[in-house]
Image 1: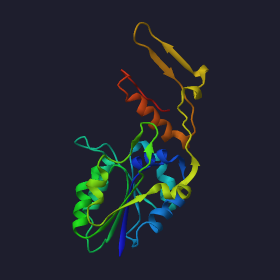
Image 2: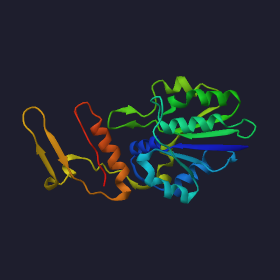
Image 3: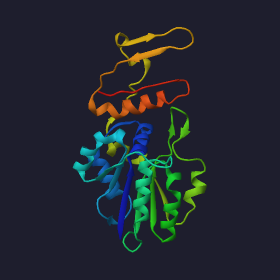
Image 4: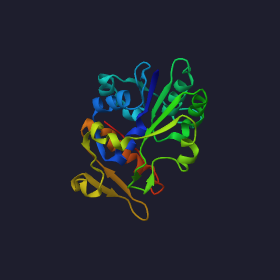
Length: 232
């Protein structure tokens, strides 16, 4: 028996946040996905797909044994990391692979290709969390997840919260609270109903992804009329 492993890193990063994980124990995470989920031996290296926002994760992931693929912008409005994983799953042959482990909460994006493999009697392991995101009081999994996926033959859900201690190097700390921003570094200019906010932050390289994702969520709000994010 052989097991193919795929990690949607952007989604896994969000899962970690919900689980209270701030920094990843890469060796522990590698052990979990290669030895503790599923039964088959590895079919090649576990594949971790990164978007350009997470390129600083490439070196530590490679160092523990992952094959890392960094993707560019997607096409047709689809996520480039999802496209890459779907392409690789579709290329697998049932006579070579008996198990597929996918680490992602964006399970709706992979439904068709995973069902196709399930029909070929490939066992599917979906690793994410059912824990509620405290920021919006919602699950990171799609609505009707149980009905859509877990009734499919050969589908198995794996709760990553059960492996929290093994995959966490440091706990999550929300660094984007207003009280954490140094007052001396912020200015506001403008008149009338619109204001321009200028914010200067100096952060460590290890924390860069967390800061970018947090800022991206703020800048993507409908309350922000126009935004520019520059990293030097």
